[in-house]
Length: 361
Image (tube, rainbow, N blue to C red; front, top):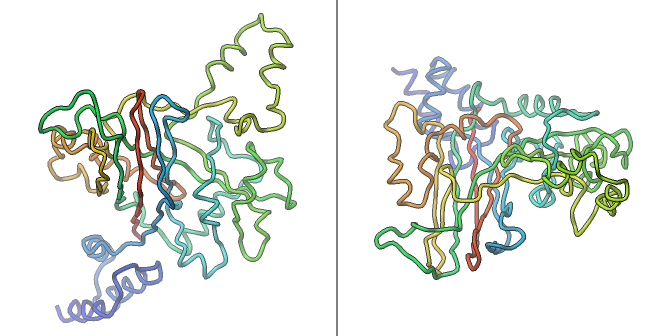
């Protein structure tokens, strides 16, 4: 018991507010050395104390999404890749340009095949060496802080059910990061996306940022081939003129601000609020409401699942608290937040959104 007491006394000198990977590993060493505790028990202690690494991202300015407009679905925010820790990475000169990263569009291709020149495994292994994630499912929890409101009125409201009939809401998506090394600064031949992606500012060990390109592949919502393109390709009666007309401007890579991938493929979005949604807005309330939602890796494990009806009454999806989303996140995965609105006159007014992702080392 004296060894454990000595170990805990040493812990009292540590800063628990926002630990880096070095801080966590130092605490582990203290508990293994002075505390003489087994690794399994140390991991349990750190999990109980929620002594985890975490990264934070947030929106910069208010934004609105309207029903029956283009777009009705808008990517509002993404997390940093799971396993990437800016505090530690700054010390080893591997950095992501946060501003460009948060504003980047995901790759609009439905496949996950690695492209030529991919160094994703090397980059992820590098992150693992610097911030070794806990084996299995390293993500521990995600905290969403959403301040938003709808248009402030509706034709029908249900008494004592403030979220009933709400057609403005937020969903969680998922992307996966891939890194490609180019032989020359302007060489983007290996990329299935627009050359502007090389401006994301990824660099390693002094190598110019232009030689490392960042791809974000959308896993959820899924990417599907545009129905018009698919049906046209399946028709044997199409003329060459029709094909050329469809592709006019695509060779330039841009048509009304869209990339080639966006012209050929599209996201498959849910039409109505799904049972996995993060949060709906209060129906017909113009004033901004703050919702703080926590998804934990422990949700649905060893405890009675949260009641689906209770979740619905609080504006959350009835199947959003099973913990599967958090437990299925791997190194390099990115959490995204999508704002949605459906039907004319419905409007999702977003004041501010912040997201904190916690993971264990």
